[in-house]
Amino acid sequence: MENGECHVASKVDLRALSFPDTVQGVIRSRIDRLPPSHQLALKAASVVGRIFALRAVYEIYPLDSDKPQIGSYFDYLRRLDFTPLNSEHPDLTYLFKHVITQEVAYNLMTFSQRQAFHQAVANWFERTFADDLSPYYGVLAYHWGNAKNQRKALEYLEKAGEQAMRNFANREAIEFFEEALRLAKNGEVKTTALQRAHWERQLAEAYYGLGELPKSLDHLKRAIHLMGWKTPEKGFGLIAALLSETLKQVRFRIKSKPIEDAPLPRYLDNTEQARPLEGAIAFVRLGHIYYQMNNPIPLIFGNVMGSNLAEQAGLKSPILVRGYTNMCIASGVLPRHHWAIAYRDRAHAMGRDVGDLPSLSYSLAGCAVYELGAALWADAAKSLHEAIEIDARIGDMRHYDESKSILSITLFHQGEFLNTAWRPPPKCWNAPRAARMSSRRSGRTRYAPRRSCGSPSLARSMKPLMDMKSR
Image (cartoon, rainbow, N blue to C red; front, side, top):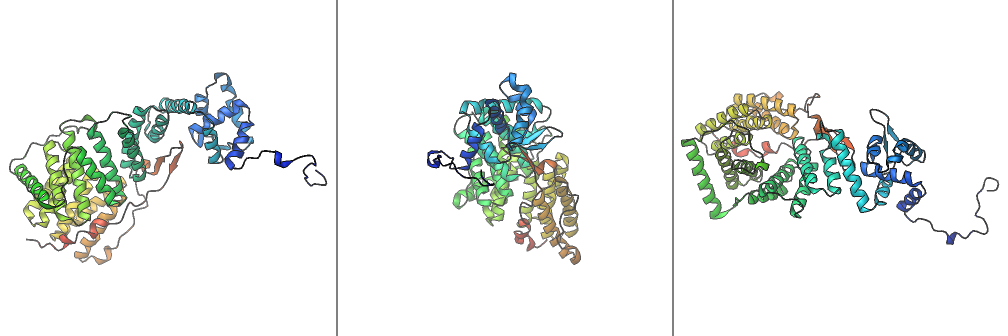
């Protein structure tokens, strides 16, 4: 240094020096210059996540003798700008200033080191949050997967996927269920055909919620085939299957099978009742997709098949509510109004009896489509107002939009032109808190506002019912 200027010494040959040629290389050289204990602390933190609690690193740090110095290690790393302080309350947390730093520290470990740290992190989460693990299902699936405990990884992937579906987080649900199917396909965990069928159907539901109908249809067919049923789409096979299922539905109406009020079996139970219930859900959704694709015969087949399977199970269930709703709409199209009214009353009564709000809302709005086409406008308006209130309460934005659209058409026919304009959800929109929370693989929790899953497609595609004449 001379006069504030820096000059290379005359005897220094820069070509003989080795400089990192990538950002990762620069960071790696900085980490390599740290004391070994600080390097190990940084590597442990990289497994926990970009944002990490000091107590989590303390618990998984492998050298007990160094644990009392963990706080001073990260104070030193903070001064070097590796991990600045994130927050002091309620837990002391740090974050990797750059995600590349986290990735480089993580990749400096051997495979066995990473596996041991992931297992330690997963165990720490299970111990620390044993009272309520639900916010951490995705994180636990990630850590158990990297710890190569595929049984536990699959357990949490299922839970995370189901939670994401309940909260309308369709993209995340797709990631979880696709990973579960990948593990099952590789034979790393033993699963049943009904279990895999359920995951395929959940993928179909997620894609349907995103408006991606071809992908939804593909996964539905896979689910139905795994359960041992066929999905005819045209020709004699479709007509024969439709006639057979229609005769079954007629027999159910002539001699109704007792419907029990008992706990519903889960797909994991793999019982005689679990399979038809899972199949009923798949076939009813199949009918929805064919409805929006304007494919009437497969639509009717899907709805009748779904209703028959739900009744075959012999249990009061949300899917039976949806099945009766679809049969109400189909009867109105024929038109057979006394059938439609009977199915409507069955759907509403069972919807209230079962106590499942999404199914009750579906029943109210679906049967309102029939009531609208049959010029029962007062009944339709009453049902739609209740459906809209339920949708706002549970946070189903897509169905809220559809119900609002159908209500606008109903009010138009009643001459209430000033009330037909669509209005946004109320400011007190009560989407579940968990719907705005998504767990990321980094171990971080992100909050995001709910977004509409789609436009009012149901109202756009119900012209046949609008043209229906009442008798």
